[in-house]
Amino acid sequence: MRKYTPNRWNYSEKAGKWVYVEIDDNGNRTYTYKLEPPPEFIELSQQISIINKKLLRTTDIEENNQLFKELMRISKKMQEMGK
Image 1 (cartoon, helix red, strand yellow):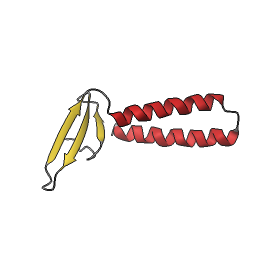
Image 2: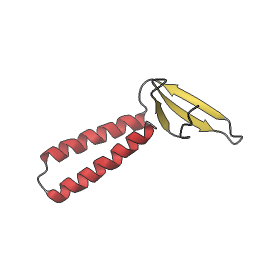
Image 3: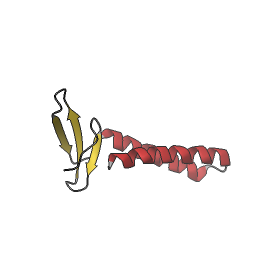
Image 4: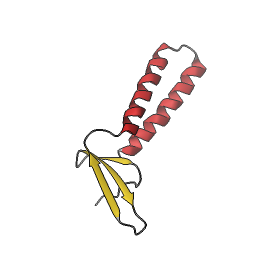
């Protein structure tokens, strides 16, 4: 059985659903499932879209580097949700 990261949304490719795991004081796990992405994932997707548009318009190398770093930070958060 796969161990999901508690207290955050995780995507289960096997189940094809989002899974939220809560652990109570006794160590019991409660699983919440949903088909549509959680609000956190949607918000991160929107942030990536905005940053991509800025990257396409910028000609400043420093701004480009900062935007790219931010894009990588957000992308990493999204990838962690799939683990």
